[in-house]
Length: 189
Image (cartoon, rainbow, N blue to C red; front, top):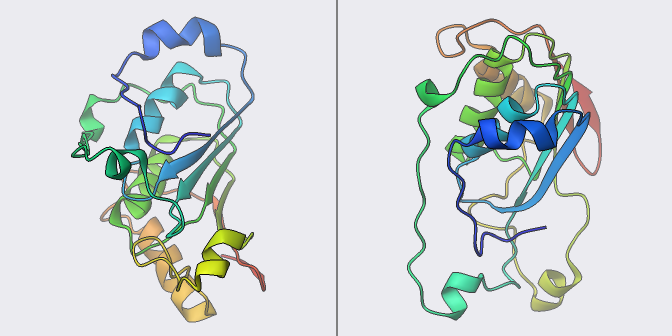
């Protein structure tokens, strides 16, 4: 679990490939909600045997990030998708994105990129943050302004699913089912 304190990753999938060569499940939790998620594609390239890949965004009003506590300006490196290599050998069947918010543009971009690159992808699970934070509740914190607002209604979820499958945006059409899992319901498209 990391909260964005000290992370810098270069496209070094070749060096990671030996260590990740037999992984079937890979999960990364605690990625600060404003951080670009495209860097995680480097891990999928290094671990083409991964069948289930999960990422979880993190944003809590109760938690002051490290860079704020020490007064450091945070750098957000941007990733360019053309820099990624072939994904034809990916075994990815399931993509899980916890604390998903379509209002955060790079969440949508990340899901589209994986859908367009994973030929065996069967399911995209977009999840609301299910466990309320006791510290945030004690503060009386409102839903987080950046990453909150999980799509609730079926019409809104349908619109997001159509955007994720839009052939004008996604390089290849994915037949993966898109599942929205909120605290109250599960809806499949």
